Image (cartoon, rainbow, N blue to C red):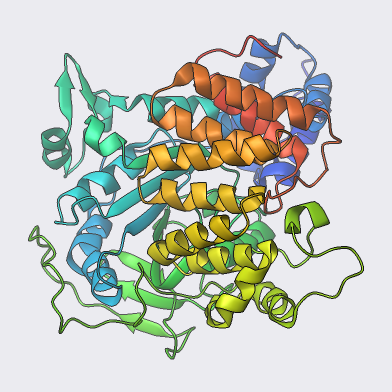
Length: 509
């Protein structure tokens, strides 16, 4: 008699350990009804790795000898197409984007993040929408995912008919370039969309370094359904921290409620429940109803002197993020100014306290006294960027690097702010100054790789990512990297390998 597997059981104990690795490193839950899906995804990974024992495959995943991210990508459903869930895009066009632009200072760069972007249709849909709203070049989109194959497709930015379907297929097709049977995203739109690796289950955001701070809009749709409850809560809190005041989070229609995990305003709309970060003086945790309004394709008008503002300073955007990207505990090398045993200046000591609580407005209010030390200057730049004020962050970073030209962190922060506003050549020069000052700074090599890949210098990007991985390989995996905003050597090494794979081959191991 053939023994039958009991319902809700794996066919081999090794698959249970693989499921444990998914939960531990990516926060993913594997319900019993999806055990067959996990086994199928794992067997495909085993075949690629030429391993026939699930227990051995699980050990290799746990030890970091095989990329867990690829298994995550194979297990999760990357089902997407251009302008999926059209009512949400109608809401963005008719209400959300105009409201955000009206609140921000003149010249504000609208910044959006597609978290869990799969093969890229979502961030490019956002690009098409923002491009058609009269914002000119004052917008930028970040797309991130954990799957290397999906990121490679997103970077290629060419799609078949299956991605151009649904009610808004005409809008998508009109915006894309036809190349035989394929549809390509135009170069001018691709230049404003950044595609990067990021694991939402890891505490590496919000951060100026990976462009996840001070955002106006986050789309994180149909991602929470895969997470364990504690990971849902942690990710919701971090995404709240990533938003500038008045910023919006759009989940998927099937995602669990998020307002119980962070003080969002829960907004009930015809497109489903979405979330808004209250502006200063507004009440969080309240429910708001937005009535349906016909979508409009009318460009957003240029601001006049009578338009409402939420700040009086010169800069872009406004907001306060409650979770720190400036870490209060820093090495002397990172600080670049205050010697061991020497008490910090009063302004710097206060900035550390305020940064630990995420009060960026109060950090900025300390102003010029912080520029006396490299650490204080970095705190000012980060506070401006975390508040969404990229113009102010740019101006502060310029003053900071002039005052402390030998501090690598300040050049790296300047590179990050310049990249966000599209000044890539200047950003490259700044990150190269940081590397010149400290060639062992893995984060700087990674930043260089991302910038070079974005401008099409594939060979240069490969060299930079290999340098980053080589530095990380010389350190214990759990080592916190200098200037890494919590990134550790093991994680950055995995990211470097993922980026090298996306860039087309990774012969150097």
